[in-house]
Length: 389
Image (cartoon, rainbow, N blue to C red):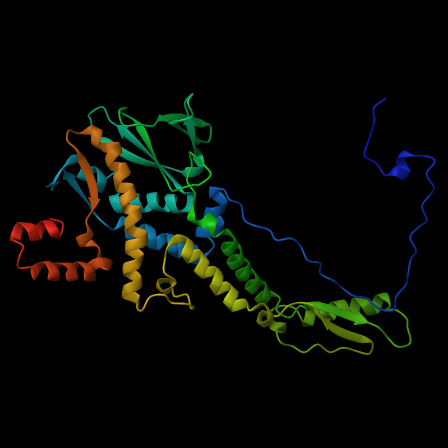
C-alpha cells in the first residue's frame, strides 16, 4: 500500500479529535493592509544584465557607451622590437576586421561584451587565399570546453540548432580567443563589473518604476480607510461599492494628483506608506547611480551625477577616466590580440595604443614634452626615446 504524505496529523489519524471551527468575529470597521514582501533581484546571466542594465538603465547604458567608445577610438600602433610598422597586414586587419565593418565599430562591440558579460569571444577565420577575418561571438551562446586536464581547449558556439567547436590557440587556421576579466571564484569565465553593482542597479530601476507608478496612479491611497462609527454597524454593500467607485474615479491617475480626499462620518484615513521625503528618495537614487559608476570606473562627475565630486574639475576627472579605466582595458586587449595574431606573421610583433591620439591625455603629453624639451643634458635621440618615439 503506497503511502501518501505529508498530511495534517488530524487527516492521517482517524482517532484525532475534531478541530473546532474558527470563531467568526464581526468588527465595526475595516482596514486594508499591504504586507511587506522580500526583495527581488535581477538575474545574473548575460541576457538579464544586458536587458535590465544596458537596455533599461541610463547610468549603465552611459557607462558602457563611454568606456567602449573611448577605448575603441584609440588607434593601435604595431611594433617589432623597437621598430614601428607604418604599414602591415595586421594593421589592415585591425582597421577592417571583417567585411562590411570598421575597426572602431568592431572594438566597440568587443568592449561592450567584456563590460556586460566579463567575457568576450573572438573567432579568426582564414580564407583559402590566406586573408583573415575576425568575428565576435555573443557571450551567452559560447561555452568554454576543457581537456582531460581541466585546461580550456575550445569554444562551443551554439546558435539555434547549430553547434560549432572552435579550438583555442594560435596554430590553427581557424581559432578562437577568449578575453575575460578577473573572477575570484571561476577559472574559466570572467566577472562582469555590473554584477558587483547589482543591488544598486535594482534600486535605481525600482526607483524609476516607482516614479512611473506614482505618475500613473499618484493619488491612490498608500494607507487605509478605517470605518469605525460610534454607534456600531457596518457599511452596506451599496455604500461599500459607492465608496470604492469614488476612490477609483476621483482619486487615482495623474489627473487626481493632489486632490483632497473628502471623508464622510465614520471614515478615517490612516497613512501607512513612506513618503519620498521619508525614504530620502532622490539621494537613494543618486547613491545607486554613484555605485554603478564606481563599479565601471567612471567618475560620477562625467555622468552628471550630483554628490561627492572627488576631482577638482572636469578635465582632471577625464584624465583619471582614461588612465584608470580606458587604458588598462585597451592594454589588456592589445596584449591578448598580439599573442593571438602574431604567429600568423614573422617577427616579434606587438600592439600598443597610440597615446598621442588620446584627447583626454593631451595635457599630460604637453607637460611631458615641455619637460623633455627643457632637458639640455639630453640629445635629440634621447628626447625622442623619452617621449615614446
